[in-house]
Structures are given as C-alpha cells and as structure tokens.
Length: 201
Length: 201
Image (cartoon, rainbow over all chains, first blue to last red; front, side, top):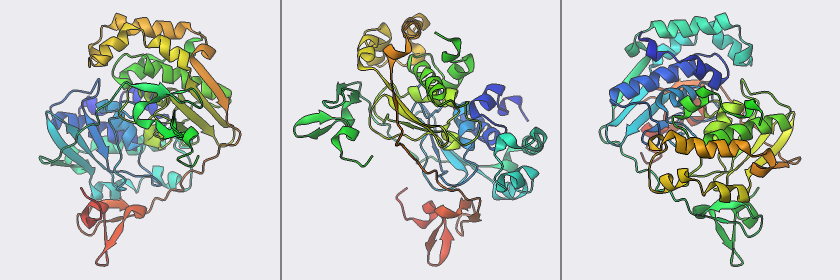
C-alpha cells in the first residue's frame, strides 16, 4: 500500500472519529485522482457524485472523499445521488470521469469485524475501543486496490456546473442579504424565501 | 479575538485555498457551539442547516462550519435550505438551537476589499496573491463578534433525524449492494435505482 492512500491525521480530526469508512473514502478519492491524472482540487474544477443516500450507515465515505480530492461540500463540488450505494463518480471537465464502487465480496468480509457489531448495537464510533477500529482499518489497508474497489471509466459522463452570480439584494422584510436567484416577489416586494411564506418553515 | 475562533492550518488544507469565507464559517461554528454549550461533534448529535444555496459565491462558509463543529457532510449532519442567505441554524437536540447570520453592513464593508475584485473578474481563490486574501481575513478577525454576526436563539426549532438501517441487499441486475430504502421493484425483482430505470441517468 502506498502511504498517500492513508488519510493524514487532520482528516481524522475533521471527521471526528476513527472508523473504516472515512479512510475507505479517502483512498477511493486518491485512486480516482490518479485515474483522472488530476491534482487535489484547490478551487472549483472537480465534481464528485457519491451514490449514497440518507438513513443508512457508511456515508462517512464522503468525508474521506472530501478530504483527499478537495471536492468539498463548501465549494459545492460534491452532490449525493440518493441511490443508497457505496460508490461515487468523479468528474473533471478536462480529464474525464471514473466511477469507483466498493466490491460486494469485500463488504461481506468487512461486515464480520467486531467494529460493526458495536455499531449495530447503537454504539457511536467515538465510543468504540480504538483497537477495534484499528483492527478493521488495518485489514482494509492490507488489501490490494482491486479487492476493495471496482473501477469503471465513464467516457459518456457529462455535467454542466451552474453558472454563479455575485448579485444580491436585501429582503424588504428582514433586511438580510439574499442572492438574486433566491429572491421571491410578494405584493411587488423582493423578499427572502422564509419572509415570503412561499415554503413552510 | 480569541485564538480558537481562527481556523487551524488543517482546515485551510481541507478547504484547498485561502479565502475569507471558510474562516468566517469556522468562527460562526465556534460561536454557535459556545451559545449551545456544546462540544465539537465527534459522532452524529449536532445538526446544521446552512441557508445558502447554489449558483452564488461565499458558500465556502460551510467548509468552515464543517471544520469547527464536526457537523460534516459525510456524517449527514449538514443540510442546505437553498434560501441563498449567508446564515445557518445550529441544532443540538439536548441543548437547543441558534441561528447566526452575517450582518448586512459587515457584508457591504467586506465587499470593498481587493479580494472580491479578483473574484468578480473570475480569478480562482488559489490564484489570488496571499497578501490580498490575508488583508481581508485580518480585517474580519479584527472585528468584534457583533459587528460580524447576528445571533438569534431559536427556542421553537425542532428537527427529527431520519432513523437509519444497516439492512442492505444486492441489486438483481448489477450485483452491487443497495441499502434497503433505495431498492426498487421491477418485474418482481429488487433493483438499484439506476438499473430500475425509474430515474433518468
């Protein structure tokens, strides 16, 4: 295993606890960058579409992906598809797209580790003994890439990022700034969505 | 200014570039934790609802919020409302809720800094001279909390997190694992959403 596949300590600090899925996402992101011959994204040029959803575990993958690729939620570069799958598509407009998913056989084997019996009993990751977390993490990082990940090139994948605008105006009701596309009109006045009452609070 | 309001170096590394909004979000998150008498979230017990949207700048706020609060996208603790506003609600089930927003007068003053003339010319943050970024960051961190943030307690705010399930099954078509709530039925077979064709790819 190359060392740069393993998350730096700050990625664990960002994530908040020690679990196998953040590191699995980190490594997935590094492999995707290698495949796309791309650097970690400093600004706004790499897009990731994780196929995870909500109401299921193992989404921690995404904190690893954010950390290794730089495609962060704050830069609007990572968007879930809500398919409930442990996979992600990585797209660089100049360098193409690749999909990485976790191998089903790998998931079956990993599920036997003690870490998951703690989780299924409702014990939060930070309360699981570190040696129990490290046992499964060490096992994962002892496996070769192909045992863990399926890698598929996606030559037909495309995505057009939204064109942004700096233009904003104040809501006539609360006085707070609102970016133009989210201003709404009520009785001829420009309002923010909550003040317009156009959506339930 | 207290030093723990300023992001550690790893938060800049995570974010990928030096801009004023990540640090503004970091400080917003620390202030919210103080108000809620809460610690940085290690696991899954703090929820943040940023009122930002897409197609507008300054969303970098959210990477600061993720970094200081531990309410990360990978732990499904941060969810945008798509109001296009530079604000966020922070909710801790035991400790209550608070909303922080950026003061309009503060935003007007900040907009005069050279950093934003670079951004409006389409220059990416990592290509802006560091001294230009530091000039506005230093100014922001020289201001008192009330000059920058409006803080509103939200005693009536509530939110019920989705109950998760570990149960998954393989898609009968592609063989990949799918968490149960995202399985779909077609011709009597359990399929993942892409294989079912129930949504456009």
